[in-house]
Amino acid sequence: MRSARQEIVTRIIDSGSRLAGEPVSDVLENLSGLANDLRQAGVKAGNVVVLEDLQSRDLLAAILLVWQFDAIPMLCQKRPDLPLTNTSFFIDRNFVAHAPEIDAPVHGLETTALLHVSSGTTDKPKIVKRGVASVLAEAVAYRVRLPMTPQDHVIVPIPVVHSYGSGFALSALINGCRLDPEPVVRVSRLARKIDTGTSAVLALTAPLARLLADTDGTGTTGLRVAMVGAGQVSAGLAEAFAARFGVSLARNYGSSETGAIFMGEQGMGEPIPGIEIVHPARGEVGELQIRSAAPSKAMWETRNPGTSVVYR
Image 1 (cartoon, rainbow, N blue to C red):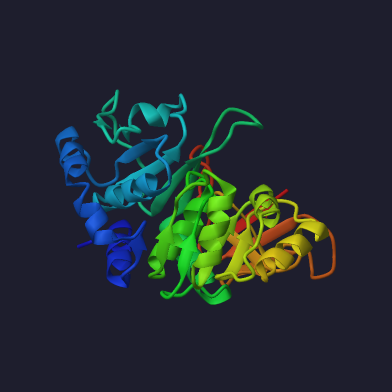
Image 2: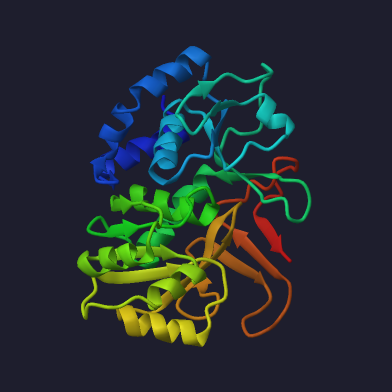
């Protein structure tokens, strides 16, 4: 019987999605050597596999490969010095698999899809759990709200190691899209790709949106949807981007635990399907409390708080 994590990979393959121009099944077949290395290292269901400093396409391919083992990928730029990482397998930037330093079981991740590592700006880095149900719910939100369809060319030039980038990219694969996760080398090159493409859906940060708005246009654009993750979008930026590409900037707000929870073209947008605002009432100001149909898994150090999440 296949696990929920393995079922995500099956669903992605069956959807016909393409990763950097290749069918996902071919991408995974080309990782057969790494898969053999993981087997020899002893990876099995429920293990954590740290993906250290992998970028864009490589990171997404590694996530899917780890899911095929029914293991849990941890996304990070550098392995944090935390107890969990000492008992985790890991794949380095050269796609070399390493066995854990300490052979010890890891519990409490039965329904976890991904582990993210916080920046540590408010304290030491923390490990954040993202549930399988949450990943699938976010894919539904993109499909319904954008909508994200199999005809779309989804461009994700932002870091996939962060929850916004990974959620956007994985949603594209689940929804059967053609996913282009190439990072930005030159903004002018990205602008040309948008201008010459068709049915393009674009994931952005506010600074990248500003840089794109300042590029020279060709008079035509293939951009259908452009979405900015959490960050300030001034009226000037919104106007400049719309003038350059002919579409308004959509907004996306969420967290590492939940992925997207609000989408829209003004302010924070509206709650995605499956998200209920408990407090404050519409039009009032106060501490934001939400209830999610896909319960938050919270931090690694804490117990699951249930379906109510409080954002301060």
